[in-house]
Image (cartoon, rainbow, N blue to C red; front, top):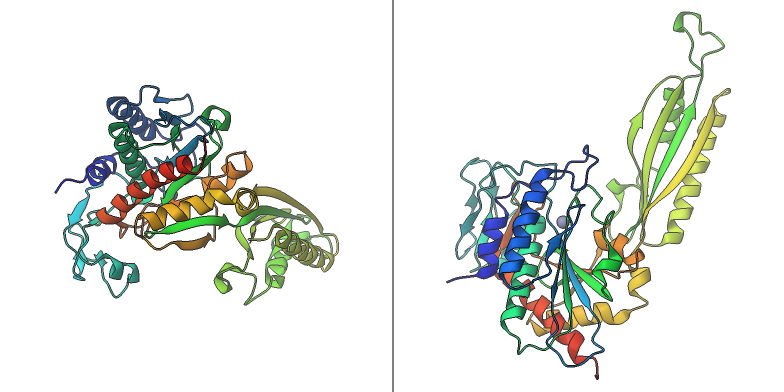
Length: 414
Ligand SMILES: [Zn+2]
């Protein structure tokens, strides 16, 4: 049995497209550009004449409209080509485990790497399906090459079925999502869409229309350094003040370790220490943007208390916006998510509405003028050597994309 989306996926994962936080260029690694150029050639081959890659490594292409209606909004589909730098992506060897029946899936290059039904509840929904994994020493890269393969396959389907009515459909493949830069050089005006959908989610049927709102806080404590042999009465140690501050942060609440669902948190994640000056960086997360301000006031008050407890110390506090809950934007255009839900149902699946305890490129794009919820791509265990995806979930995602294109056309009178 042939499966165009599976064949593409197996081809794409062999490209090493890990992004690199330490490289300032866009894309951050040459491997991404190699893949992007080959993608452009493939898009040309399936008939998307305008496909190109821009100077920053972003690929865009157009599926021309088939409908006679002139008022159908242009919609877009987006996936990222990079894979996580946290796990090797060199020499990925995909393995298709046909007709999964609950057995242990042992990955041959490292027999300790085993996908067990008992450990991975999502496998229970995959009986009879073909599961793709890597070979045990690398990630698979379903995040997000599953999304890339699904979008290209849907585009190919639309091009070869001109009887399917749809408006103009745009595609974009972005670099460096995993290092938080996927939206940095995204040319929203050039993309020219009313809205878009990222294909970068998990289990089949998922529609994600809400993400965290996110800020970064930098708390800098200033002490006074002098020779420790002669420091009596003069030294003020910023490391100790910072420790005092961290100790004052709430325990058992408002932390990543103690929250889930809709609760936000504050999280010190890195510290640069010196007697003279110690910098503590914290991320602040909440679904409600007003909730961010409450948490930031609390953190600021605790930092000032810690500084005040050490005479001679001083503290500086700054807050930077990272991204905002996309729901604020999507609530103004309810049809964007409604049509996605309808497309999932029309493909015979159950809609699973999820809130992302993090951000996506869509969180930033939504505020750059391109409302962009996230749809399932079938990714599981991402950033891990136990990463997997099923052929059937990818095929479902292709159907959902095609259904969405039809629905946007149907809902317009002329
Ligand atoms: Zn992803």
